Image 1 (cartoon, helix red, strand yellow):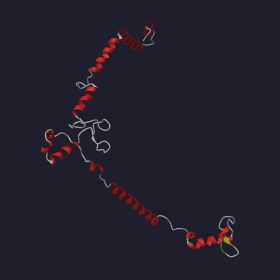
Image 2: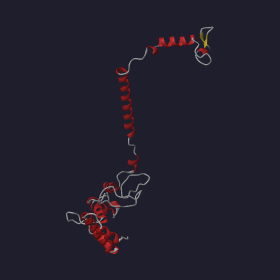
Image 3: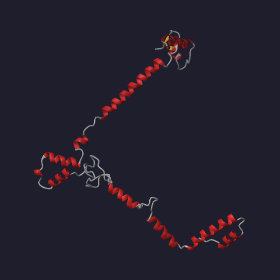
Image 4: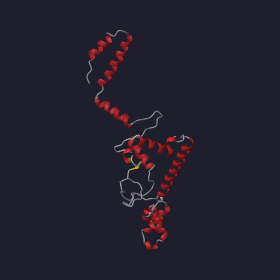
Length: 224
């Protein structure tokens, strides 16, 4: 970056007031400090400041990578469960799936009892009881295939909720009809509708394709 120092000297000398002269002097000193310091010195200072960041309380702030590593090691989301495989998506989580029955981690955390059973299973399996085999299975898996494929009965709650909503809608309709809507006009009665139909036939309304075309005026009855 290039600065014209002669222009700065001219600005300081010909400033209209002492206040502006003082500000011009400050700017000149600041720019002179930037020009005098080399790029390597500035880079070294910035690197030192970024690596030795200290907060206002005097405690040292850990770098971002170290802080995240410390946090992940201190509070692991899977606890002390063993990672036994890749899983169905490469993430260390547990999920019972028929299409991929091998989760990435075990279902339960490693306890002294489970650890003792795993040491025992390294030997002869004939020495393991049925309950111990079930405990080993439940430590690694949550459900069996029969439990995964078993019907859940959720359709019952869905149908029940739908019927409840329908009944509520019917009750709301009946309440609106009884207490909100006015009665139907007299023209909706059967006698008025017959009188309206007779009037339309007498006036020969739409004699080509409508009602009048289906009425036999000679016989006084509907055409057959």
